[in-house]
Image (tube, rainbow, N blue to C red):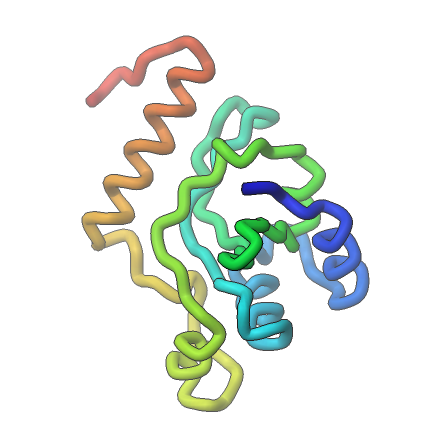
Length: 141
């Protein structure tokens, strides 16, 4: 798996992707670009910010196993792929079903994740990796 930074930056510039709008940026591009791209929701850990775990969205081409990071401030952080923790993937067709054909959605993230077990498990894993990378242990397990 690799991050295609060149194409990601081109899309950021061309489509006017905004910092701190990862869910909206990815949602709009997933509907606009090739149907091969998957919209992914999950977490990213940020070594530049002291290993915070951040709710995040990105695009993935499953055929080439390539990640597209279309949120400018995240692309600038120079994340490694082991900092990405995917939880849910949506195809463009699935996103269109969620919008009832309007191309718009009422809220982001798409998944109501704070009450779902798989999100809590993924968040715990992301925090554990962040603490391990920092060389510390969490106070509460």
